[in-house]
Length: 292
Image (cartoon, rainbow, N blue to C red; front, side, top):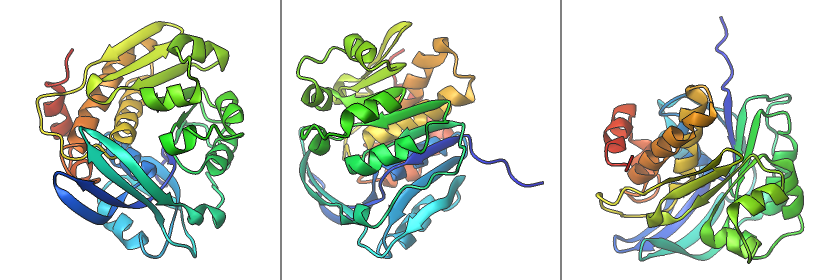
């Protein structure tokens, strides 16, 4: 019997990151929104990945996701350099030092036609993020994530993106860059969103829906090495847990806690190495440190 298609999908970036911090400097570390999300989500369930990658990154991606239930049939290798991002970690946060995103000139997102599961459109160039969301409107839950370097520009595509998706994720700084008077429930109602997730880094994460708001504190009992990808790992763990337990409104807090545990594991190593090596037992163990 053919294997069932994954009910969870991520469209986003595959990146080769240059990362600097107290650990020194690491060049061309595998990262990207689709990488972190799929590595976290695949701890709990199969996930389909939609992203572009260059010849310089494809083997690294295959090596990093080996053994995980990550469907790569919608991964597209294009004749362009893999997306690059450069960041410097300062006081638990990344300072963006620039990116090279010409790969998006050569790629158009092609998710499976008629996909009706849950989809997360991670950070990528705004025109391609909107295009991906527009091709996933049949999804039962469709979420998108902000990225500060793009959010600060307030791209013309942003209002259309917010009108297309049902959930929106962003850091406090990103959301205030989009709307200087940002208030979660007002923002949610303004754009008729089902949910808004606000990430506060060491301050935890909040989710706001018509049923009210939930806040989960961050894990502060483990060493923070590199915060790159924490938000994508959180979203991947959160959605996989919530979807896998029935997606009931009263399960949102539980899902946020599992996502927080995944984020905590991700930031305990440079790049995507930590979450790539994590197991379900590791997440359950870390969950004990997530404030209830």
